[in-house]
Image (tube, rainbow, N blue to C red; front, side, top):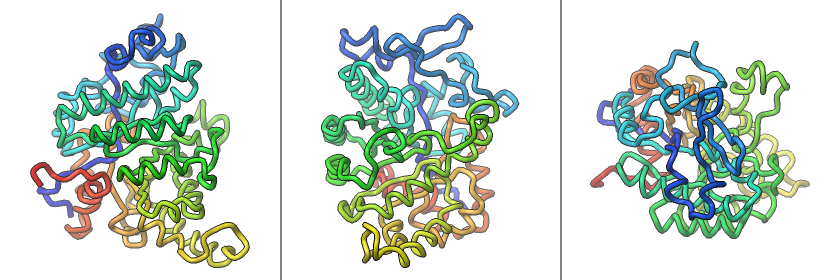
Length: 380
């Protein structure tokens, strides 16, 4: 069971940036084109970037609402909990749901900076990434350093700039950076190439795990209706991206070249992991001899040394936790997105873990995350 002294650490939540994040930080020459909130003719707020609408809040800011009120429609700041964008209110909301610490993904820029990857002005894009990272470290996390884990964006379309940003933010206290899970699906080289080696080397040298949020490598393969009129299908299938990246990584050279590199499969769930681990080993045993794959290390061994699964509500995964590895499982609350159980997060989690031994529950809900993200308890 989940003991009362366990400080829940959620490794996937989201910050809705306040309107001045970029206005306060971008050089003056970029402010007009940089991200800013503009009230639209329909009365809703939208991010505008390089003169075009770049996104709205929709399902990203629905914590506290009845599911009957969910939708893909835009929203306003006054139509969401203040904790979505105000750090002081965020901490109060965390206290209400019983979560001690969070690692937050960006909103305006996409899970891994995809909005900036479409920029017309690459200098503006780089400056916008740096401004966001400074906001996270210097404002959002600095206000409550034992409650917020600094997660960075990277200009992944430019390897040299990405390495530089990893080094710059690591020196400022970064704990992880978000990255596209399946770069080949968004027009970039795959994990099997050596294109990403400088990035992975920098991450390993800085002891920064990559946090691969599902959907950062594009939408799942689904029907046109799944992405439009019946989004329930797409939402149900996003975890397939995490399954895909698991196969791509464990059968690639990545972890052989970078033996200390770690990655979290954020919001991908864990119930599918026992099958995928078993299947990868089964295929590897039979087909490793004629393929360009390491022939000495089982994928399952690589998994336990390098990959971490994250769950919100996953009874199948909890039941199969020993097939996954207790040390490879972390919890996420997803506040303020539509999968969040706020304000009942701790209660729901306690019920899900009622038959799990105390030490295993403590690892999955706190200590695995603290170890991976180098985020010890205050005073420890």
